[in-house]
Image 1 (cartoon, rainbow, N blue to C red):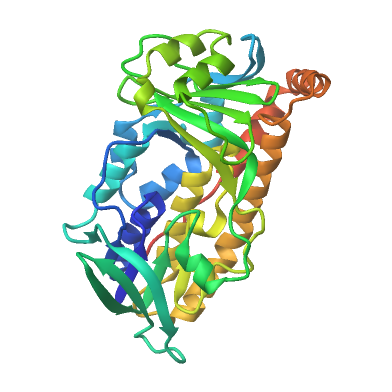
Image 2: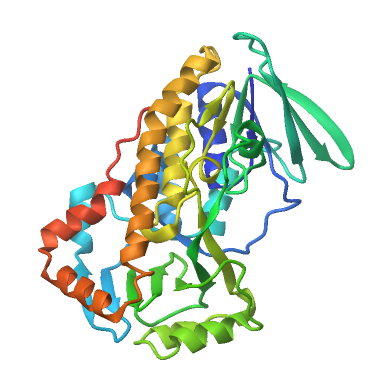
Length: 391
């Protein structure tokens, strides 16, 4: 029984690991010709780490990252609005959040798969018609590789091909696709950093600056502002300095410690219109292809890991695929879409809030919120029990 995973991102690789544990013969088709070290950091929360534990790589990932440092939320002046007790959060969820470079996590995931599982330079151009009934031959996947058109058939197809998923567009042609959230973000990683190492965000009117300590002595930072789609500037680092260079320490120092050529900027997009299903025939959407969300809760990668673990748990090579994928959709769609909605809401009252009076009111309300309530509010999206994957 063959399974094809389209896309070798975090969600796609986790799906491949889990499906192999179930006994599937898995091929991952990745359009990039090679993997590079370009990228930024991310935060793995309790739910993502539990999923990686089920996949058997949680300890390896923890050894490569940095457990969440004390932090919280500040104003652009540096005044604390809300503090996070990292130890209390760990007691509440049973594990500490982890900062890790995306490329490091990706390398660990690739190493967990046998050589030859991932085919790079494979551009999927479309899917063939669904086989009739419950035929195990499934449907065809057509892709370009080494100048040739290749057609293969698989019993299970996992579309983990990102926010601009070609599979989603083919199978749900009436869906509007991703939309601009109203914000753009710069992403950067410092060189070796000896200064403050807090997992924190700072808010100004219509702007946010966040930091995540990484396991290799560096710090990942992100800076977001309200901006129209496809906004362009000549010098990205100069634009970051103009907007954030006057903010509290250590923001200016972090910018100074970052190679300007390595700064990434991306418009923040999401699937504002939720899909009616993550499943069509023997095809399952996963990760951003299914529920691309704004980064305001830091749950994008974590939700993709959840998808992968649930898919592997419910879908074995001897199972009736339609019934297994219906269960995957039942478990994953309500939760992931709820998290996506919450991320948009947090963005609107957080980074995107620009009216000075509204900003002041929000900050005051946050300062007055009891720490226990604030902690539980932050933890609820990361509170997820990973299912066991039958071996």
